[in-house]
Length: 295
Image (cartoon, rainbow, N blue to C red; front, side, top):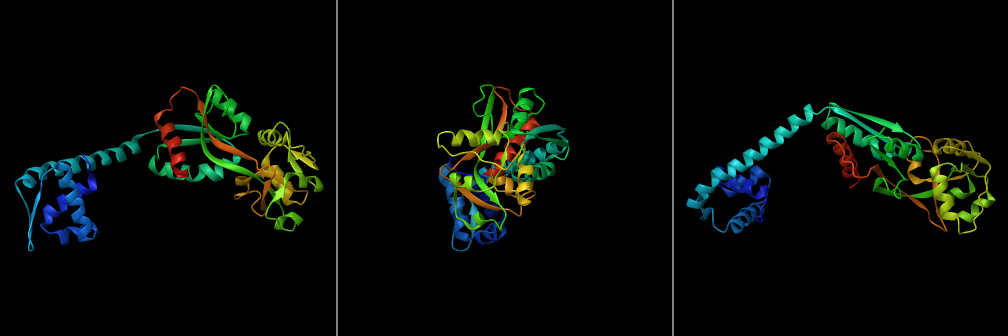
């Protein structure tokens, strides 16, 4: 049947108050909107529920028979919702998530705050690790799932995309490139650069993206992790290519972000978990909350 709970509530309120005007005021609706809801319910049921005159509205025989059933449905829904609230207070457990450091600020922190409000008895443990370490943690079941940008091609892992994040040039506001609308990768050969070491996941993605372009990799300083790279860029050692979200708060907050083009490179950030293994109730709830926050 093509009606919803708002239509059912509208009918019950009109029946209780015997007035479309009073019911509309109580539900904070206009009278035409309220009338449409009641008419939609009647059309779905295939019979009229109310007799309307210019002075009053009252239930007909079908309406009097249907009213207690409508109250029962709404009462059952309210009881079910209250039961879920009570259940959330009783659920206990531990959710362990391995995630890249930039995901904590951009994807996880707000979700943890809201999740704790809904499920105060569930603890959340975050393992801030490198992308390759996250894959190992998930494979060894040391983490319930991971948030990373690697793993989409791993046969034993399921990858679900949260966001696509471009690589950008990070530089100080007083750097000559800071005022540019875009910078070509080939232009970086003319400047001092701080780069990530070849063993890092981000460096792997950059090298793969530039492999067939002939763009040289020139650097002044090499580091293992993005936070260290940003600290050196802030200190004026050079410029560097970083994931855009790495500049959102914390380290690198004072730096300028300039799009890198020719080619435009990006990384896919998402969750990874063991293929074919369902997540436990609390873990699944946290996993779902991450995607709801990005919707």
